[in-house]
Image (cartoon, rainbow, N blue to C red):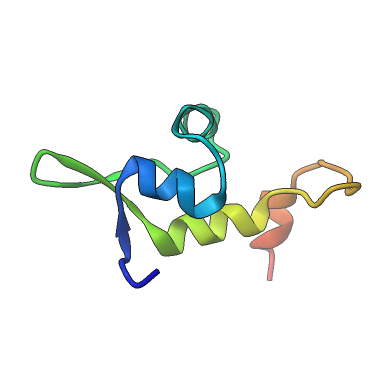
Length: 72
């Protein structure tokens, strides 16, 4: 994928989930909110990557991995 700006559907597809699940993850802060380009909402692929990296891996303690990810 070469585009940095992703539509809602493309951002959801990029991380392998449905747009509805992506919306829920944005709402609860597990995925970033969009940026605006005119009237369009666009997700920054790099931010999506950062948030995805902070998600707990299967079997990990879910604690506060977001803070741990950015403590360095």
